[in-house]
Image (tube, rainbow, N blue to C red; front, side, top):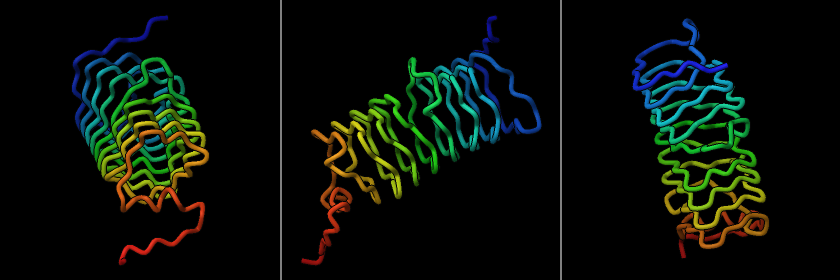
Length: 193
């Protein structure tokens, strides 16, 4: 059964809690100020799509395809990206709230997280090689058996990453953020001296 293909369409200020969202393959579409909260995106495809100022909290994304998807000024609370289709999985996040979301075991190399809030996000066993966390708050986020090689954390804060159980080769951190690598040891760092 073939899905509906929707190309180059703009969706503005639509509340999809009130109106149904057609299951299909969305290519080069833009969604601006739409409310998708609690919508079911299972088995949808989003290729080269952008989401601007949208609420995607608690959206179901089982076997959903995101290829080159851009999320800007979006609220993405509790999304289980771990359930997404692995094929072609790629996205970036700018000025988004991703609290309580999960990327468990996902291969998302070179992903850009910019000016975003990532509280209690699950990055366990995730491959974040060459990813960039630019001015992100990672309070309570979990990193365990995570590949962070060549990842850039220089401008981010509130992370706690144990170097003994994560791969950090050539990852970049700022001097002010170094305490996030030493949390496990209970070391106090005095920045006044």
